[in-house]
Image (cartoon, rainbow, N blue to C red; front, side, top):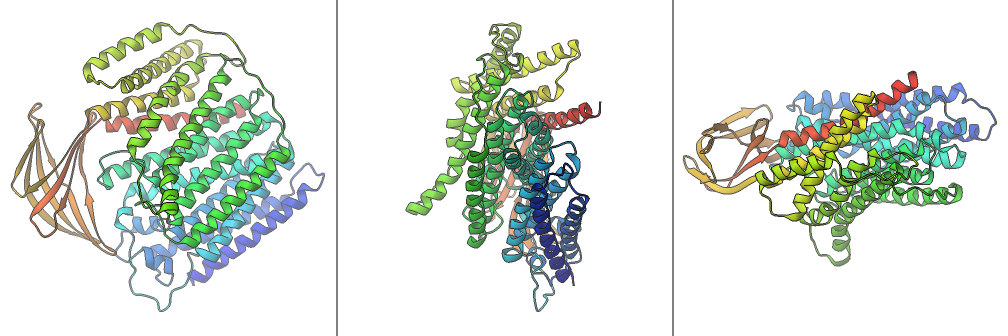
Amino acid sequence: MLSNLGNTFVIVALLISFLLVFFSFKEFKTNNNLIPVKIYKISLLQLFFTASSFIILLLAYVLSDFSLANVYENSHTNKPLFYKISGTWGNHEGSLLLWINILVLFSSLFLFINKNNDKDFKILTLLFQNILVIIFLIFLLSNSNPFSKLFPIPLEGLGLNPILQDPALAIHPPLLYVGFVGSSIYFSAALAALISKIDSQSLAISIKPWVLISWFFQTVGILVGSIWAYYELGWGGYWFWDPVENSSLMPWFVMTALLHSILVLERKIGLYSWVIILSILTFTMSVTGTFLVRSGILNSVHTFASDPSRGLFILSFLILMVFFSIYVFFKFAPFENKKYSIFSKETFIIANNWFMIFFLGVVLIGTLYPVFLDTITGSKISVGPPYYNLILAPFLIPLLFLMTSGPNYKWISNETKSFFNFVLVLSVILFLITFFIVKESSFLLNLILFFSIYLITQTLFDFYESFKKRNVNISRIISHLGFGLLIFFIYINHIFSLENNFNLKLGEVKKTNNYVIKFNNLEEQSIKNYKSIIGHFNISNKKTLRSQELKPEIRLYDKPVIITYEASIDSNLFSDTYLTMSNISETDVFNIKFQIKPFMNFIWFSVLLLSLGGILNFFKRKKNETN
C-alpha cells in the first residue's frame, strides 16, 4: 500500500512539474505584469505531493515495511527509532527523494517570497528550476525508485551501515543537501536574469538571501561531517582531504566567492557577468560532487553506491547543463568593461575571488586526477594532505592579508593607506610572543601564524572602531574573525598534536612522552543492535599529575555484520585525549592509537563563528527590508 501511494505521489508531482514548465513558458510569452494565481496554486500542489512522497517513505522506515526494497536494504526491526528515521535519507534512493524535495521547496519559496522582482525574471527562474525537478524525478522513477516493491516480503531487513548510525551523520546529509541543492535556485535565477535582462542590483538583491542560506547550511554541514569523522572513524583528525569530503568543499569555495561578488554587484559597480558565472559554477560543482559520490568511481566511507548507470545519468545531465549554460551565457550576457582602482574594496574582493577559484582548482585536480589516472593507465594512487598542504598553504598568506586589509578600503576609491599602523605593530608583538612559546622552525608556518594573528587583531580593532561610530558590520567581522581563529588554531593544533601507535595486552603499561597508559580491564556489553567490547584504560600525565579514564569500544553489529572501532575522547576546553583500540586477529594483543589533540573545541567554535557571520548577514538584510 505504501509503495503504491509513494509511487502515485511521485508520478503526480512529475505531472505537476510538467504543468509548471508549460504554464511558465506560456506566461513568459504574454505581456501581463503579474503571474497568474493558478501558477502559485500549482506550485503549492507540487510541494504538497513531493513532501507527501517523502513522508510516505519515512513512515515505511518507522513501520519497518520490508515490502519496499529500499527499507529492506537499509533498515531492520531492532534499529533505534532515530536511526530508522535518518535511514530514510541514509541511502541513494531516499537521499535523492530528499534532494528533489529541497529543489521543489526552493522553487516554491522563490516564487512566493521574491514578490518585487521582474515578472519575466521570476517566471523564467521557475521554468528552469522545474526543468531540474523534472530531470531528477525521471531519474528517480527510472533508476532509483525508493518505492520499488519486494516480493515475497522478508521478515527482517538487512540494516543500515553501523558507521552511519550516529547523531552527527544523521543530520549531516540534510544540512549539505540544503547547501548543494539550494544553489540550484540561483543557478536558475542566473539563466533567467540573462534572458530577461534584469539590472544588476535587482539580480544581486534577489539571489543574495539564497546564497547566504545555502552557504550557511553548506558550512555547518561540512562542520558536522568533520566532527563525525573525528570521533567516529578513528582518524583523530578534522579533515583528511577524503575525495567525498572534497566534493562538499568545492561548491563552498565558489559560494564564498559569489557572496563577496554580490557585494560589488548590489552597488551597481560591475561584476554582473562574473556573478552569473559563479552562480552557474556553484550548482555545477554541486552536481559534480553528486556525480562523484553516487557513481562509485570514488573509494570512500562516504560514497552512496557503485552503480555505473546512475553515474552515467548524472554525468550526462552535468554535461548537458554545462553546455546549455555556456550557450545561454554567450548568447545573452552583456558586455562589461569596468575598470577598478587598485586600492579599492572591489579590487580586494576580486582578488579574494581568484584565490577561491584557485583553491577550487587545486581541490578539483587533487580529487579527479587519481580517477583519470586509474581510467587511462590502470594505476591506483591517492592524493592526500601532503599535496594540498604544499600547494594551498603558501596561498593562504596573501588571502589572509586581503581579508585583513580589504575591508578598510572604500568603494570606488584609489586612496592608498599606510601598511604600517598600530594594529600591525600589535600583531608583530603578539606573533613574537606566540613564536617563542611554540618554537616552530618552518618559515612558511610562521608566516601563516603571523597573518592569522594580524587578521584576528585587525578584525577586533575594526569592531571597536565601528562600535564607536555606531556602524558595526557585525556579520563581516564575525566571519573574518572566525576564519582567522580557524587558521590560528589549526596551526597550533598541528604543532602540538601528539600521536602514538603501539600494541598492548591486558594488564600491560606503555610509557610515551609524558604519558603512562595502562590497560586495566575488558568488559562485554549487549546492546539492542550490537555487542560491545569495552577497554578500560588509565592515562596519567607525569607533568600535570592528571589522571583520565578512557573507554574505547569494539562494536560487533549483526545487521549488517560489521565491526566498528569507537574512539574514547576525554575533551576539555584546551585539549582532547583520544584513544582507539582494535584487536589483532587470533591473538590477545590490541593495537592502540593514542593521540593528544589540542584546541579541537576552538577549531569547531571558529567554524561556527564563520557560519554565524553569514546567517547574521541574512537577518540584517531582512531587517533592512522591513525598515
